[in-house]
Length: 161
Image (cartoon, rainbow, N blue to C red; front, side):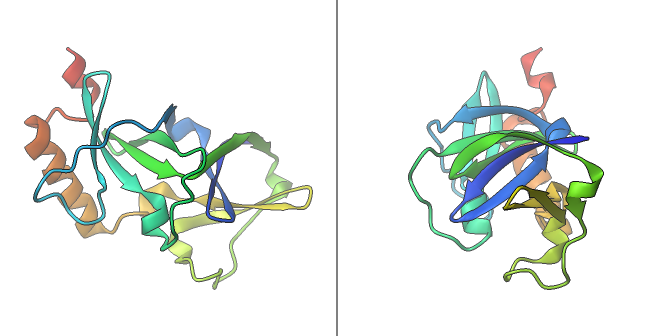
């Protein structure tokens, strides 16, 4: 059994493996900083850490619903980043037989974003590969931006010390 944080973006249901999730928080004040790359919505202060925020709705080309928006803080390389989503559904366990590989073409989503599909009852959950949500170039830019924001400490646990 694998556990996933299950959430909605527009009408689609997604899951991220729970071992990468640090916490789920309500939307906070997002600071926009000149010069941040376009894929970042801004940064936020989470208990003294500067955490970059990626709006997954923008990433997937959908409009924000404005409903019960939440931010999922995840471990990404050595950093923490936040993913803005429309709504958190639940923490769900999936057995190996409830997970399948994604089809080569899937509703316009790049298949490299997807590790598989989960099936629970009548529902399909798109299981995201968060390591592939950013291109190699974007990962480099993200690291440089984090370094610029906090002299190499932003978004890491070192900032607490």
